[in-house]
Length: 222
Image 1: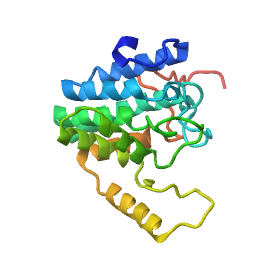
Image 2 (image 1 turned 90 degrees about the vertical axis):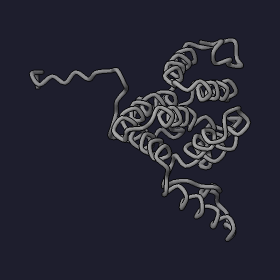
Image 3 (image 1 turned 180 degrees about the horizontal axis):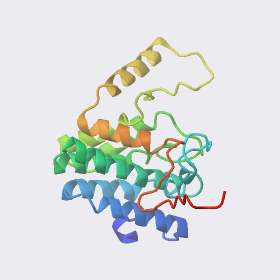
């Protein structure tokens, strides 16, 4: 597992090892060798904090299982269950499913920037990750499909410039954000799958984890 992903840090915590195991299990589902290799290349250079970070820096915007150490990876695994079912219903080709899988696995790799210097979410992280992925090898059509699905995964909250800074914004900056949002609201099939997976897997009222059953007993003492 460590060899496959080529992680930078040779001293792996238990939480990091579990996150690596979960992600590799999903990457191995990709059938297209070029997309699988591309995905492994990217994970090999992701900031090591990705593996242990919570999904929400504030703890406000995700259900409990997405918070705490490794929560971001758990969010990704949850979203992959949505990707698979969405693709089945939409009758994706294998190539589309592989692109959506790669994109969702990578969509939050730059959540706090390429280098994670702060625990706070960068609200332009879709765009940051999309541009970062350009460096990895893949044929152009698939790479663009994955990059755009990563870039626009937060629709309708897609930004080219963070809107939460305490300062006046220029007309150019506001137009950039308008352009980013407008494009995000007209997704391709792969982009739509990633948007839906990110949204539904992060709802506070929808707490779940793939493969874990909830025992609801109707005969329990009240």
